[in-house]
Image: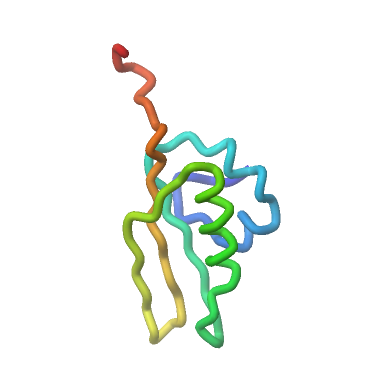
Length: 84
């Protein structure tokens, strides 16, 4: 189970792709670090999330620490206490 209250590690999504279907927030933050700047886990995680309907809305990269964060939004999110 992924913890949406903090940044989710890309490797956790890649290790259990079906876990993304349990995400309930409107937005999530996914992070990854890469020694050679390939970010292969992050790219795989983005593809897994895209297949589940999530959309990338922002990215940030810190070259000093070789770390990247991606913010994604769930376009199918509906507030639970809102009248439809």
